[in-house]
Amino acid sequence: MIDLEKIRQSVGMIGDSDQIIEVLTLIGQISKTDISVLVTGDSGTGKEMVAKAIHKNSKRKFESLIIVNCAAIPSGILESELFGHKKGSFTGASDNKIGYFESAHKGTIFLDEIGELPRETQSKLLRVIESGEFMRVGESKTQKVDVRIIAATNRDLFKEVKNNNFRQDLYFRLKTININVPNLSDHLNDLHLYIERFGLEFTNKNDIAFKGFSSEAIAEMKKYSWPGNIRELKNVVESLIVMNSGNRITDEMVIKHLKLDTFNQNNNLPISLEGDSDQLERELILKQLLYLRQDVNELKQILTSNSNNAEPSNSSLFLPSPQNKNNNKNPDDSYTNIDDAFISGLKDEAIGEMTMDELEKEVIEKYLKKFKNNRRKTAQALNISERTLYRKIKEYSV
Image 1 (tube, rainbow, N blue to C red):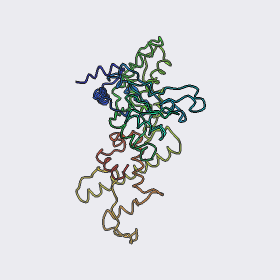
Image 2 (tube, rainbow, N blue to C red):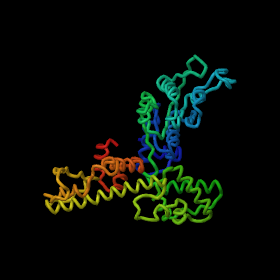
Image 3 (cartoon, rainbow, N blue to C red):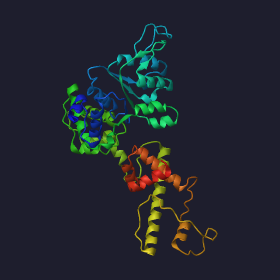
Image 4 (cartoon, rainbow, N blue to C red):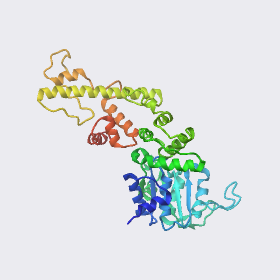
């Protein structure tokens, strides 16, 4: 049996949602082994905490956990930092240096932002994973090390492999076990737990009275998208407490701090008013074109339903217009059926320089990116079924 509570308490991991329980369960299943692990997730989701939990529940828990931020080390000295160097091997190398891998011997090394590694360093990392061997910079003697490797990234490594920025063999070696840490927006029912923890920790440390957050304030915070995830939430909680010291945090305080009033100032607008003006104008035009197309399709369904006694269908985002079999006729000629009249009413081959298929694909891609590939939220925003969205994604290879 996996003791989820023990794993949770080992690093103070918060959350009772299904997503967090799934992460805790995976940690429990793999922590006792020495298998390499790839932790993925957006910035601020808590990937480092997952690495710490794996280490603290492993047989190496009494040894060192070395944390390395690959993105923070200049590429010119990265190899020396990881594997060490011999005295005199390059300018400034006045002494022998032990690298992070040697420091982590018998323990665990956590390579954060591994997608930033140069390709030449990736090949040396692959050798360490496969054989436990490496060489210090300036040496020809092979060193042996016994270390467990946990890597993390917020990049799409598979896409990096296709773009020839990341070694395919290293990718598959790392991806033997993959733990994906969910975005905060995907488990907002845990929000109150994070708020309480961050609030208590901050006020105790700074000797500030903490009177809590009102239920209305928490409800308003759930409306926010939290692009910075848990790291952003922690900063917001601390800022609200400092700016309203001694007071219970209300929904008005939250709205003002997160500028939710700006976002919701006009519910008739189909998009948020935050961002570059040119991008917002384009998005607004695209959205209105979608609405226009949907309105026309609904009208068509009503007309065809009245004609054929069929129920209208909402199974697709855009219904394909029928092919005009009378392209050579004058548009002013009388129409033989409703479909002919429809073609005259809406020419859908192109709008400007963009076809309707291209428009549809672009909007789907935009909303998938906006909701971080959450298909349920994307389908709801586009007012279509998930099944239809899946079909469209497959059709357009999104």
